[in-house]
Amino acid sequence: MANLKEKGISLLNSQASVDMKTAGKTTLYTVPAGKTAIITHVVVRTPSATLIGGSDYDFGTGANCDTWKQTVSLVSLTTATTDYIVIDQENTKYTVAAASGTFGVKVITGATDAATATIDVFGYIY
Image (cartoon, rainbow, N blue to C red; front, side):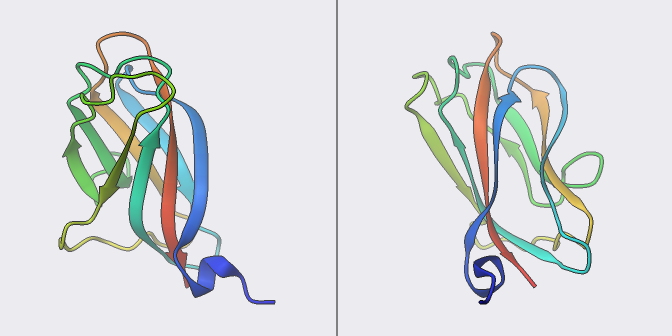
């Protein structure tokens, strides 16, 4: 049977308890060896607390997670456990995630108070 991740857009990974306050990188998805990934969208959901102050998050590959989407503001995620935001490509050119590479989020300016969130990565591999 064909792998759905190679035949359609699907959930590639769901990473729970991502620190949304502390500056630094969190890996969200590792591309399987011998494959390439196209990330189509990311969902940040169910924060543990308000993400007020979280005005700059970068998503992508590399040490700075700066190859997919930069300067994403999540300040509107203010209701714990129910809010979510879909981050998509908005007709912009991006770089594919290479085999064995990692796609992640880097907190630049995080939430004012301690908070975590679940981040879902969607796309396909080939």
